[in-house]
Length: 214
Image (cartoon, rainbow, N blue to C red; front, side):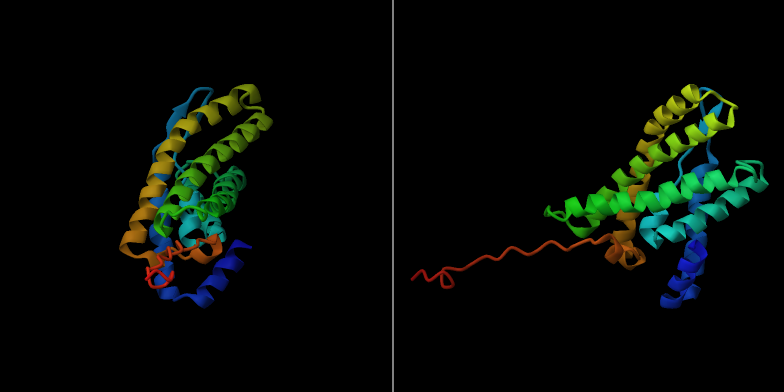
């Protein structure tokens, strides 16, 4: 489904521009995940970047980018081939697709404010990426517990607690990158319509003549 959706996106966009753009984002995500932090209980945690990619390119493109990053990582023994499906689900589906729709839901609320479009998307992306990484950590803890390697009552609390801390960095970095893109080249945010971002309505200021004051 992801490859199909990205193929449709290539039909609408300039593929010569899109391919290197996807490559750059994949490299950024790879760098995000390169540093692992030991988590008590025998696991580890790291930044993900799935929600950030989803906001820039779209949720299905995020699944493809995360999948490709995970394939490369598995070649170096990070994650592994047998964990590829679970990792893609956690980082691509939860952080990418679910994270995108969490951001969209937050933007629905922010549309009622007077914040500018860049600030709405930046704030929603930061909050959404934080929620998404914690949800992905919860799913990973459950999967590890079901695997029987680490007891679930150890894996789940450890993964969630430490990713609540790691998520702060994820939120800040995601927000800064989205805000920078808006300032430098806002047309690179390809999901603005899909997110339902509404511009701020200008206030109508009536003059004395318009209200009939002589």
